[in-house]
Length: 449
Image (cartoon, rainbow, N blue to C red; front, top):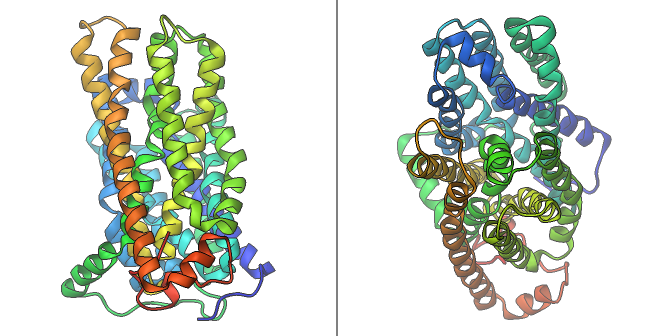
């Protein structure tokens, strides 16, 4: 399949529908964030049982990434999107009608499973429909537009819960799911020339060989560790521990704490296009941007945690901005996957990369909870010192991530130089005529940033 020559109207329509489906997915994923107290009352559960909703959903999502990627490679992104939105819609109806905790848990499991195929399917469509120089930009747009779904799951959900109650509120996005299934059926095609472009049949032997081949490529490993190390801080902040850390650990006004959470999201959305353009025009320095982001996150978090007493508001603003940038920087991991794997294996590669950030998030969310419980007497609010030790758990994962990113940065650059020394020097000096996309020429596992 030849590379598209320009951004067409058809490409924007396909991408717009797919991104709309992704925004709905993020909305459904995040819809429990403002309904925690109502959920505890509806199902008669404890705070620990309530938190299990989020942890289980993330675990299912992470565990399904590689199978979901392989399914996209086998059946095509259009079919995967339709199946994923269908599962999400049915699961959301089940959650809206659930009256018992086990029934609600089963619904959240299927929400995590349906969610697992959506994002990587949209990325696959981006790779098929847009010119190479525009793929990093539209990849960033895809990730950040999803944040609109997360923001819609705050104030609008609160108003719906107040005005129409539990069942109608959670059934509303399910109705939108039906609309998007119809739009995907009518308007989305796998490629500009084919409505559906399936891959070869999948056998157990082929699944194993595909995973081995994809993981053997240095670019895939680089992408995994980029996504492992850059976004977990903002995800932990936004999903669970940011608000308690600010209010109880930093004595921040609750309204100011909410504004800081929104600030992280807005900074992420504002910087995403800039990072996308940087990657498109300075691909040799993708890893430099990743390492710089990690270093700044570590320095600012250290300043907040080591500040004598609660950190000043200006420093917390800087913290929210810095971790917000980590989200779009993490998308660089998918650029490594794209430029290191052939299109037929890109779903599996994206799935492996996407696992990184969610594995790290689950590890940090769990570690913070365990440390807080160990350092806080039963029935007492979490204090600044307890939060200081708990949030310090992030530094272990950052250290691992930096070591691995630096390791594969050296390896991939050395492989590129050994293969084509002249091309490497031209690429290093930003000559974009050099064929740096490894997926279009053998050996696909020998050249990358």
